[in-house]
Image (cartoon, rainbow, N blue to C red; front, side, top):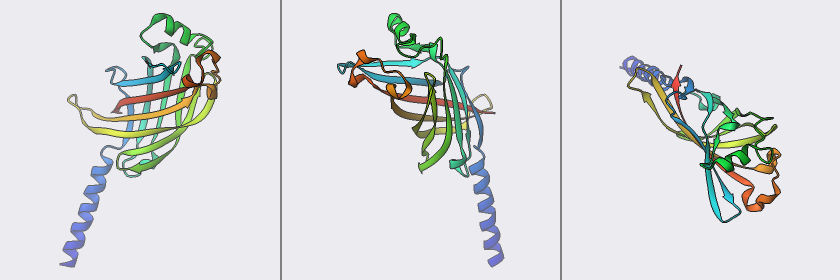
Length: 194
């Protein structure tokens, strides 16, 4: 009887490990299907909110289901793809007053470590390089879900939020005022397992 119980326990452990690891792997952002978004929000002079997004970015994440702290993510954003729904404002954001896209055509984020907060939630700590300056930031991340897709692939999705000050990245545009120095960002990505 003891052998039967032990064998059952081992079988359950093996099946559990297999199920946990079935969604481990490297996932490429679904850029082709446009199931990915980077949006931002910043105060306009303290009177209202300005919303925008970056239309062109790519990346991947590695998810380790058995040890999520071993997971990682990397993202590259084309800064000239900024879109605030106003052509003249976008031209100004792309200028050397802000993003200076001619000199700094890309912004990148590369994770350094993942600190698991709870089931499906984690802080992703990494280096953001923006406007030629690299600073450590933290993404507050949440797994949205994962599973097989209708086309024979396997997908996983995450949402992450962060905020940072523009002047930390060498963008000290004085006309903005103090209320407009902090940017809030929301990143939502769906990855396809490779």
